[in-house]
Image 1: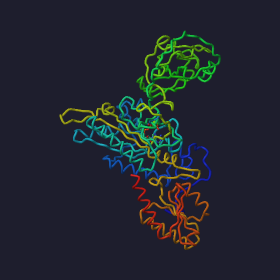
Image 2 (image 1 turned 180 degrees about the vertical axis):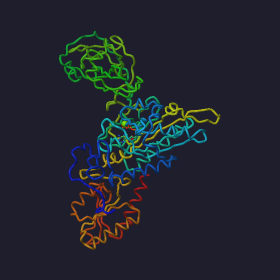
Image 3 (image 1 turned 180 degrees about the horizontal axis):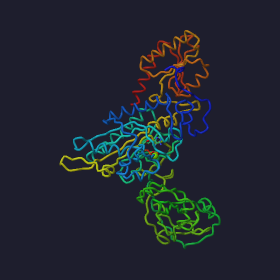
Image 4 (image 1 turned 90 degrees about the horizontal axis):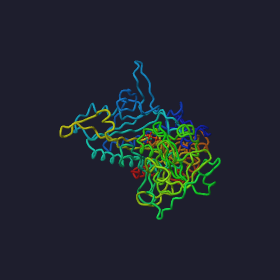
Length: 573
Ligand code: ATP
Ligand code: MG
């Protein structure tokens, strides 16, 4: 492609409404433009990067035995009513009526549609296993669309679904996808980790998220410094707490005035104790009903763990008014003694003695409180977020908390959807069975954003070679010089002959602005045809990622670089 003919509207200034670096750079580098909240147009370079991710995804899915389909984006409400998700999905599902008044929605995901297809088309175990995938635009009316391609309302996803006759087959399909996902992100040239994720009601170790490692990531990953244990924060557990060797004798309960001290730090400072000696009482609404959760003063509740314990569909923290309505106590002074709502405790709390809690009265706390003697709880479980003080639940080594961006998610669905939609086949005994399913997603457009979050510097994007919109950019630094222009053109044609994606900057611009734009759009290899060529017949080659520069005689450039690119692309597999 010639730069002079390309729609590549780069910007000098960072757009004010872009908070994260990938969003800023995608706009500045002319890759995307916003139409409305969470909805973007992909310009030629943005689309080229997306297509590269898609190509890798397709190759790996096909290699793993999956077949590509394309399912409708508009879906009828009846299917969602059958699965029960028409009610459950909430406002993220964009619903509308067609001209006949039929309720419909835009597909945020396709479990219903694919299960419907398979229940109609596959009737025997002989048609199994099956693994189908598509790459398609999804729509989710996200509550907070933000960060450009990271969390759009309209975005491109690869979603795949496996159908098996039994658990064993489904587990095998899961492992195959796990491996294929590793290859996908490795081939994209990204630093990533697969982490265990929450399986909700399915249970078992059958949900993994693939996380691109980046300090700016929204998710926290818990990674063992020694063994292979890695989980996301929702799922991560710590080594269970050990009971203290000597049990402190319970002391008499004491009521203490703590005027205006509501926050953990304020209370503990006032009492001259550490947060580890205090128990916080946090109120959550589980499907609208209040539940008090007790955690140590220095710990935080993990809502997904709470949700699983309670078997709730949705859990959210209560605000001050909701807390007061449920308990009659202002926030900051809440405690478990005499509380009229359900109370559950983190397992750490069960081992504490003589701790401090709120007095259920404004400006009062209680000292020397003991579980069992002073109050009871409905259940004790692991309900908190892991911290860096914790130890690995598998090997006991130290844990690392690091940030990541979820780019893929694989999940064993079991028979959830096949039972809801009554999707059955006849097994080899002639018995009706429900399909055992799995689902597998990759955020294709988010992967491009995540690649930029992970790989950039102050000058712009540093694309990993496999997903760069162009692998090579040639800068013609004197478009008015015949010899230089002829050399640049020759390089351009020879690279194209080699099947290399190459961009020729043939614009009538000053070298400085060509350098700037090349850095901004992040093309891995920059070739400069200018003074050195006129003087010594050499072309300078600069690697975007490292800044390393070398020079080669014109005739050697294409063979050497084409070979290097091929080697690097195959080495990534
Ligand atoms: P998140 O927790 O980030 O909302 P999710 O759990 O809703 O993600 P899935 O339903 O598992 O996501 O979708 C599969 C993949 O699609 C995700 O791993 C992610 O990479 C991508 N994805 C999900 N929502 C968005 C979005 N709003 N914008 C861009 N990509 C998305
Ligand atoms: Mg989501």
